[in-house]
Length: 289
Image 1 (cartoon, one colour):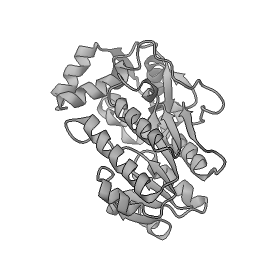
Image 2: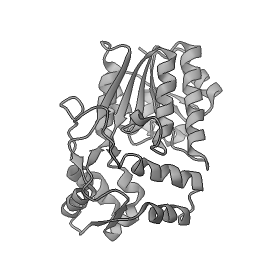
Image 3: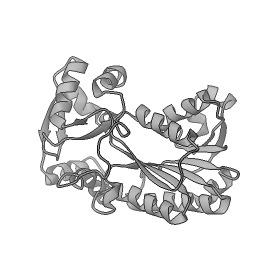
Image 4: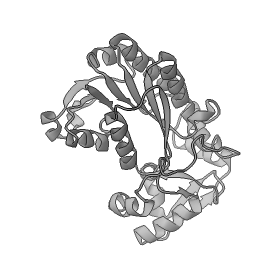
């Protein structure tokens, strides 16, 4: 079974690739920057230089592939949803032209809304496009990544986090390594078919107030959180240099899941994973402070 993995240097991919290698699989890795991959991988994986927003490159790189783990690459332009649409076009072209039988797609909680969740709308559009191909697909609906805290490491250092969510609003938080584990098991399991949705909710739903308490204990420094208005955070994004469409898309990921949103899949033994925020913070966040 030929398995292709996109964004192997990403938060999930850097865990998923070694898991597949340890399972005895020689994965095909698609990346724009092969030189950034660990040197040891060359003995255990095949590597193709490909931009996952360029259909011709992805089609050429995935010839002979039977299964693909697809991640829409992070938006880079001033129009994030257009970036997602380009990645979707590349994936669907490769699946159709190379006869790829199975896709595991890294989506997000909130994609089930289809519209009104900012940048997550791009993932929702990818879900719909894969569904329309009629292949076997599992959409991994992932919670809020622990690693998102690294994007705002200055705020963590200062001990002052900010959010537009009510401070007691709980949502799923998850370690990317746990997503990789679910992805690996799904890729290696031959017994599923059709269209599946698999939520990856992490060990527990957390509010931002609880996150601040957990980080305070795990990092041995006081961390607080304040709630901003939508307009205040939007203005901060613009002041930081984000293009208007990007600022709207990033803000929408929070505001779109704030009011009366309930994930399609409830928290169960199937959707719950093990790694707790306190453990991740001590092991992976603390060294960055």
